[in-house]
Image 1 (cartoon, one colour):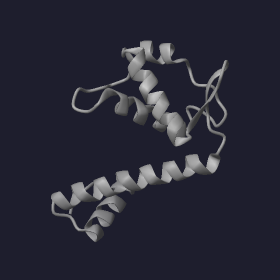
Image 2 (cartoon, helix red, strand yellow):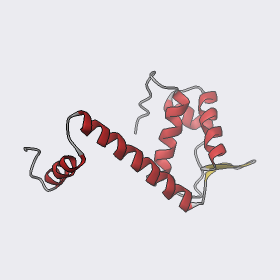
Image 3 (cartoon, helix red, strand yellow):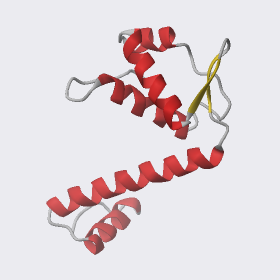
Image 4 (cartoon, rainbow, N blue to C red):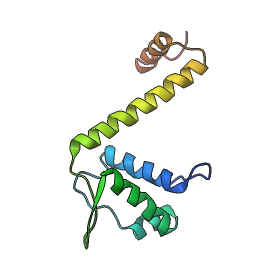
Length: 125
């Protein structure tokens, strides 16, 4: 998947978010070794210092840890990963509900519309 980084937000934050999503979605499993800073920087077309900054933040949060000569690895704390996944899902749901409210839908209308769409009945009211 291409690294679609935009100039509206700090690049290292976007990298951090991308790697977090890769971890919680299962692309990287608990205990997996991450590619090197240089490999990921080349893949994302960013300066290695920017990638290093994102890795440092991932380490600070405990999602990633370093082994001195072996590289960086994903935490084996599955509970931490599941909590992060649930937190991110809640955040996305809240953003979706706020967007629906801007369109004039209340929660019940949003749920009814979602149900119709999920059941293949379109979005006609």
